[in-house]
Length: 139
Image (cartoon, rainbow, N blue to C red; front, top):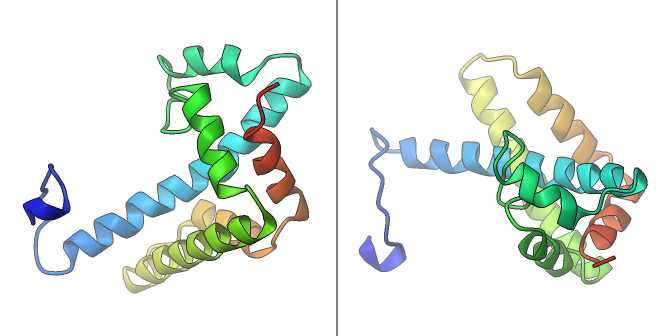
C-alpha cells in the first residue's frame, strides 16, 4: 500500500474504502462545478479570483480549487483545455455522482442536494464548459 501513497487510512470493513473514495469524489465534483460558478460571479462583480482566493483560503469557502488562484486556474485549464478534455473529465465526474447516488439508494438515504448536483451534471449545461475555460484564464 505504501507504494500507492504516503498516507494510508483504514476505513473499516472490506469495501469501506471504496465508499470513502466515492464520497470524497462526490464532494470534489460539487466543488468543481460550484467553484467555477463562484469565480464567474465574483469576476462579474469586479472581484478577481486572485483577490477572492486569499480570503477563501482562510475562510469556510476553502477547497482545493480556492486555496490558491494560480493553482485553481491551472486545474481548470487542464480540465478544459479543449472540448475533448472537458468531455473526458465530465464523463468521470458524472460516473462518480452516479456511484454516490447508488450508495445512497443502497443505504435508503434520500440525498436531495446530491440528486440536484447529479441532475445538473447530467443536463450537460452548455455554459459549464465555457465557465471552466474562463476560470482557467488569468484576467
